[in-house]
Length: 83
Length: 366
Ligand code: SF4
Image (cartoon, rainbow over all chains, first blue to last red; front, side):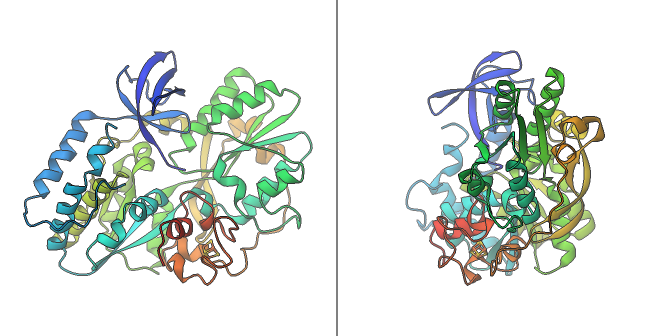
């Protein structure tokens, strides 16, 4: 129920926005995220954008992964893409 | 897709797993609060791939599962009133109640007996149903944690602004920090760290978990839902255990800010007040639920339709309550996969998309 998916905002219309969910357009409320701009990614939960994704923070987390990965000799436990 | 694929990189995941293996110095048990994490951990195969010394227990983070059977009974009774349309999120309609009416024991059964039960994707859809049915009462069954409660508050504020007189909310919303406290206070499971619920924390903010290191010396890592996110959270918990310095680490900073979403918090405060609430598995937890404020009593289904029902009973033999406290694993329930399956769920943990029993069965754990 707390499922929330990153989706890109395509257009804004007052307190509503149109987002692209896997090629399908959907109208959502941006009442909780009035700062959102066209092109931003938002987390959508039950028809509301509950947060605007922070690109700089996402890049920082990815950098952290690489930093933790200070080792060699990996054994391939994961077949291909996971998730 | 952006913000998803980068966090599912299998090569990196393997390396992080290897790095994790080297960091673990002693056995430890972590609890993922959130049922979304339980599903993600099983779906990605992480559970089997983690170092054997790292054990994960699922927690109470499945809103549908923790809804008390007496509240399910109330919802069924509300739906069965003449002139009422009961709207709710999909997961809720199949959850078994405590069989108080002796007839329908889920909203789905009530529907097959003639009740008008509608599944909606958003609270805004429920408002739409109220607008086009002025002669009927639309009751929205508000289930969910802090992630969902603000969207229900939004619907109430909108209904008030429009002067809608046929829309009410039956709020069984629950708060996650008090439930976490209840589990730690009970001391039934020895935990070394907690994987904090990512989307709940988008709303309440990472700071809301500061009580864990402060009052319980318990490390907390707020996590996203992709495999790399979860690995990062587990790694930071392991590091905190090793260093002996518990803290709150926000490993989901692209979605979670220290202070959370202040508008969402404001809407919740405006519409709801914090009350003691009954949880399946945890019993009565102080200051852990959200009821409608008296200012919005016109939109409070509990006031508009007072019901007197006997206390709910748990489905016979179901250990969902123990599963929700992390005391047993779903596979330890004798009914798991035998009499209790997703098609014929005995308890709510087998129903929900976030229920631990459903996840274990779906991803072939035994
Ligand atoms: S397997 Fe079914 S009966 Fe057993 S605890 Fe889970 S939901 Fe309850």
